[in-house]
Amino acid sequence: MSSSARLLRTVLLSAALTALLTMAASAATLGAGTVTADALRLRSVPDEAGDILATASGGVSVVVLEDSGDGWYKVNYNTVEGYMSADYLDVSTTAETDLGYGQVTAGGSSLALRGWAGTQYDKVASIPDGTVLALEGVCDGWYKVTYAGKSGYVSSDYITITTEPTVSAASSLGAEIVAYAEQYLGCPYAWGGNGPSSFDCSGFVKYVYAHFGYTLNRTASTQLNNGVAVSRDELQPGDLVFFKYASTSKPVSHVGIYVGDGVFIHASTEGEGVMYDQMDYGHYANIYVYARRIL
Picture 1 (spheres, rainbow, N blue to C red):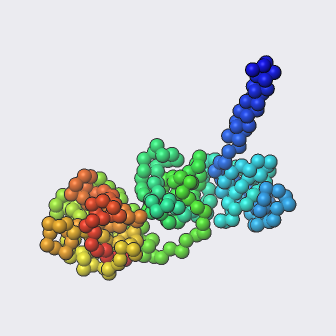
Picture 2: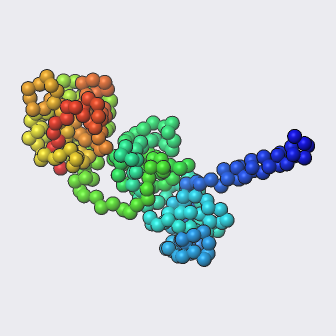
Picture 3: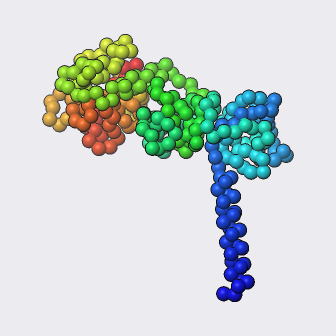
């Protein structure tokens, strides 16, 4: 290879590297943007000639989806995606501010609520797919949210901006029941345990519901007489789910509280006492028999 050819190759490689670094520096970021003008227009394209989709008042926060370059940000404002001038947006990758609502879109799986923004932090709860959450802030690509009384962070990769949900009183109370039950995760199992230091399965369910003013029967079999029957497809957080071991002649032999996304919480005779388990596959999928709604 001639010296001129080598020089040309070096120049081209250098230019390519510079382009890659420039692309990385302007890669899509997620943050919060505060409108600094009296009003700021949301446009259909990153250009002053773009159609006006909406107008945000001064001080309003928007979700910043990416830096589009040339002085424009791609944003979501009141569920509408468009572009706003970077000249009038104060953008931060970390902020605590009202960003509207987001729906969990995890492809049928639950979404981990973590103690801080990052997968290396402890999971404090599992949020069922489809749940709508108030977005309370953002931190390095994670939204700050509160679910079932617990604050934490969820990955923005699995959140779709949406409108404020219409929540029934029953479903809201169901989430509160699940949150209260989760406070006892890790509490040991003891046959005949009524809580709060230890539980058996029906004692746990009875104890949790008693906190909300509901009096349930004491055993799993007699709790089948509480509430109304619901199908598996209709399950909501807070519903009772029942299981039957092959070794018993009773109609059911175990009970837990449905959390969502095929997950339930119960006082288990094996493992960790009060714990989560899956009922869509594995052991409990094979022995599930009934569900009852108390609320």
